Length: 285
Image (cartoon, rainbow, N blue to C red; front, side):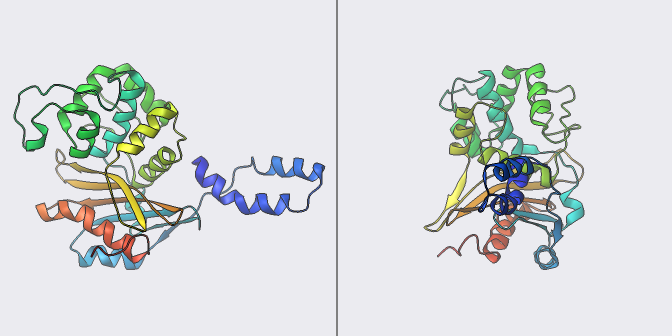
């Protein structure tokens, strides 16, 4: 179980044992809080499922709210199904790039190779801060090559990222091949990053958190990363991240089939609509 899930569920137990205890009882309480507990049950949300259907989508929206220990999904089966991470892997790749010294920091500029690609803002020199915001594929392929297969596999295994399968293509394995991660695993990874609990240097986790793309208003702040698996026969898209409001936080993972270009945009719109329904964000004026 992810440590943050365990800690959340043990708060009530801790409070009970520490209230009015003597020193011996405090010792007992400390022993109790190291015990594993059953992780939160994944609760199906038929109303969310209907919202996706009404929007012409097949997929799932998963929301983890640690304060209330509520873990919910519109499609619980799909929440446990593995998919290529596609460009959501750029979050992990950024951490590896910094940890291995593939780039010195988020401001180091890598030169564009001169090959024109489909997205115009990819076709120039750029740094990590720009590349993650633009989802620049060639930039992340280059830092993956610099990190190398052995070090990349080490960090996949150390973090237990999805099924940790890299295959033999250092610059493509998150876009095609055997690497798979479930929506629930995406949430656990993003929670560990937000809480700075990953096995990367603390400074690197804070850097990636700071440059992660997002949106905000007066009462809330959202950060996350999209992905689009276009090399699969059945294309699908991601949006994973977290939202903060009034000193509370929730983690989300959206995974939907991509059948039209309009579905690409719906990675955002369906996420925003369901977060708004649950009171995490407000309608934009």
